[in-house]
Amino acid sequence: MQYAIRNQPSAKSMSKSDPNAPKRLAIIASKGTLDWAYPPLILASAGAAMGWDVAIFHTFYGLPLLLKDLEAEVSPLGNPAMPMKMPFGPDGFQKINWPIPTAMMATPGFNALATTLMKQTFKNKGVASIPEMRAMCVEAGVNMIACQMTMEVFGFKKEDFIPECTVGGAGMFLDYAADAEVQLFI
Amino acid sequence: MTTLQADKELDCSGMLCPVPVIKTSKAIKEIQVGQVLKMISTDPGAPPDMVAWARQTGNELLDSHQEDKKYIFYFKRLK
Image 1 (cartoon, rainbow over the protein chains, first blue to last red):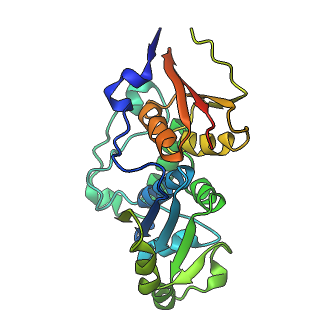
Image 2 (image 1 turned 60 degrees about the vertical axis):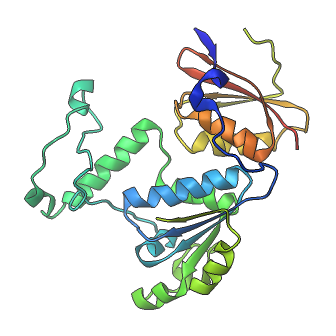
């Protein structure tokens, strides 16, 4: 069966601005868990793919996303809306949203288990991994900025990070963001 | 059936947002201005995303349609 996608209401562009004007996207990445690492990297890579000038300012817990050895984890503890589903087994089994007691989420090894399951679910569904997403951002020319102040606070050195990153502060980011049509704090 | 001829074909089957957008932006740079890129996706989010991508990058979406679970797009490189 065939039908034209452009006739779907969802297929209309939602933008009213001039598409020929160069655009800029300024993102602050302030969280470093596996789940929260995705939004800035997805939006940054998509923006760069649309020909936009993009920068991510990595601050506080978003800073470790720049580490050469990137290992983002996720915790269901304090994430009450996170679906607890298994990425394997029969279809009906995979759809079960397991009622995990909060006390069990605090047991040793539970974060590692949840991280493994989430990574597997994303892989099964065809979502790129966090290291892959970051590599796509770097390749597309996204300006990856490390927050100097957070580096001092947490004891990170420039050599700990990927060589493509630049180091700056609030003034540098605001100077960039002042000319950005889209600014996001994540 | 469409009779459009593509100069290059890109299969993004099984990939989810934002990978089809990224791969399309790379592939369009590998053809000449005026040539046509065919992109195949199984991502249900691709139709609105690809319309937006074409608008933002100034390339023309010549045709798009659905064949079973595949979404087919034809882009003409304009710049």
